[in-house]
Length: 204
Image (cartoon, rainbow, N blue to C red):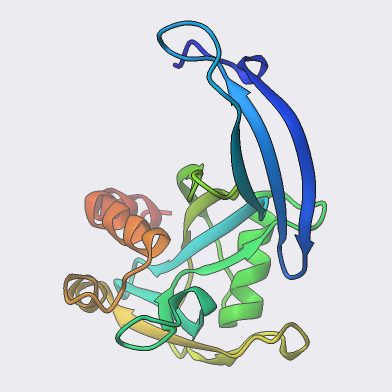
């Protein structure tokens, strides 16, 4: 645990620079130093995204996972193109718990209903410039016959959901075909905990 707290930061100026799909704030601040005293004022831009949820749908009986594929503007320069294979995910922008968002997004983005949710972790996804805080889950579901096209057209979503054997998903990750942090974290977590997850969920 760091010895510093929120009171060890002084925000000198905080301006809303842009408000669109996300908001961008321009901050001037200073903070205490490990060696003692206060640092000189610095300027930082902060992308305001808030809290988000990701879930890896997993069928323990079939040993399959579901991943979605959609366009991502941040990957415009990606060699393989800006369509990424990822988790089901969404922002917490209503009065909902992370678990409720995981279940809602699974229906909206992949057409599947989740049973139990196993928490994987929670973390800041890119704290150097964004306040996004991510809640990550693995969700038990039945994937027989799952897949297809989903998303909310009014939100510009065009999503393809596909089912893969767990071994195939790991192979895609090893080949670099899965190259976003949330999905890699979830697949690696399942690789480490898969035997226990299957034993627990299949015994219920």
